Length: 92
Image (cartoon, rainbow, N blue to C red; front, side, top):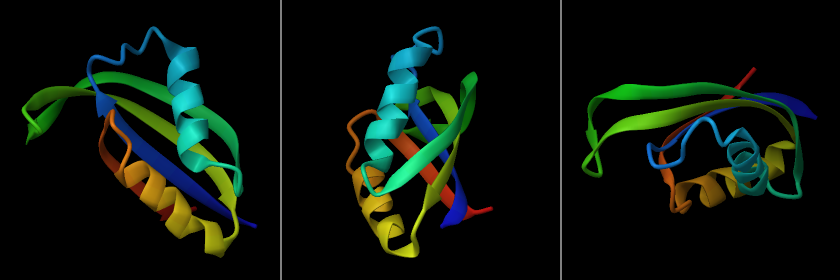
């Protein structure tokens, strides 16, 4: 299994104090085909430019172990996530 880093920017209405819900959101985005070994909530930060009329976002970094076949599934689920402004999935 390959190691990946998943950076997700959630809308700012998802408060970083609600850490458990953010972790569950990331695990739900990753799905059954992979395992999440660590989640770091980086907090609320201003965006460089407005995205979907939002000027702030809550940044979450997760370390994910997955087979190469499941990467496209993770990207599909993340792309259609209602609270997700942006994401980046990179090989570690």
